Image (cartoon, rainbow, N blue to C red; front, side, top):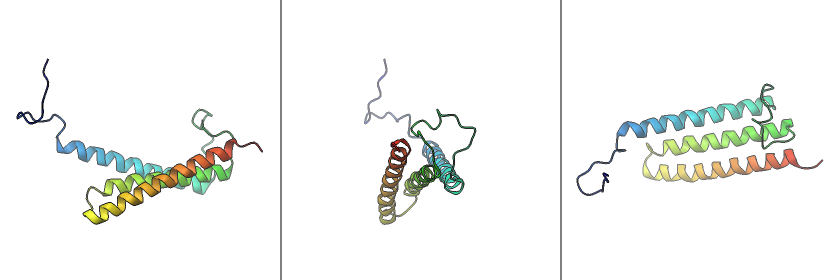
Length: 124
């Protein structure tokens, strides 16, 4: 059995620069897709008709308000992801502000998601 111990002259297997760039690229694309899907939901006010109930699982009764709130939640989480990606190239102070903004956007998206899910499941 071979165990690599840091500090004994062994290079770590995960210290390849391209891995970081690939992860940043995937995160950037994911954030952009979330923002795009959120804009779609906000503008349309409904989910695509071809989606089964399994894809809409936490939602029970999808109204235009619920769909738009889900869209705003997607926009907020997507913006949070993109802000975190930009922290890698931003100066230190700007990066700190971006991290705080990303946390705030993520929490806003979480609150919107939970509220819209509650709104779709509440008894009328």
